[in-house]
Image 1 (cartoon, rainbow, N blue to C red):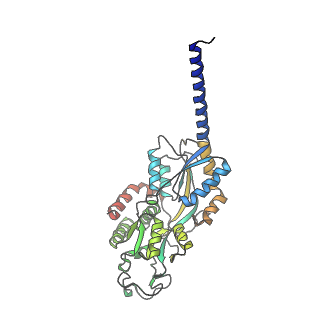
Image 2 (image 1 turned 180 degrees about the horizontal axis):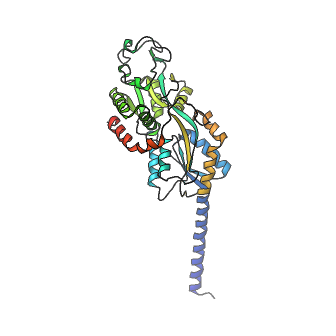
Image 3 (image 1 turned 60 degrees about the vertical axis):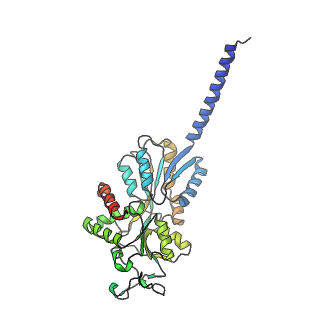
Length: 336
């Protein structure tokens, strides 16, 4: 006959066996997943990640950023987690923050990150008020649109340069996202290199003084321009394409030397919790067929690497070394 102690021992072992089984099951679930921080818009990223799940047999846990602070929010989170990473893969929607993270050893040392395809920063116009074509006389001959809105389509000629956005004619008619975040920030930083600090500061102050709408994100810029609240906006090509699919009265101005081409980026985090799964997702997002899907959805303007020679070519090392100073200058000028 078994003693009371025997039954207690059996019970302890049974409980231990159940706990061990649950732990194994939990480990199995964890090892079968990959965590991605995605700055790419969820509407574009989610279908791609679901297809990866089906193909790879892995569960993707995706964390997306809000449009207002993209990609800065995710970058700051990765920096905060650097000593105890929670993320496996970072999917960026622009290059500057990715290079910043790489410089601070957030990504693995070898083959840490890659660029894929590109979008572009564009001037978007409301075609009910502005036309793309030759000018009708001098700028001085054009009445301020805020005072005398034209009754006919395309009444004012589109600006040929970002420099013109400080002209009185566009006072209160320009929209842009906060220039401290996302692709707008990268564009402003790159323009500082193009024009020199003195010229750039003068332009930023004149632009701010011209009463622009500063809104939460590039898609909001497009909507505001489409409604006619602003007639001109600084935004991204994918947001313009999305608005055109909706039939909005908008158009993008052509590429110039002030245009910034902005690739997506994908990176593997140093000491990623699931390194093998991270590598699979890293390779998947770079596949030609996957990048082409993003291009067909207009999440990217092109599936190929940016090769245009007329657009901005930032010196990234110099830009990153000046990142903190430039951000402080933008805060002083545009935060109110």
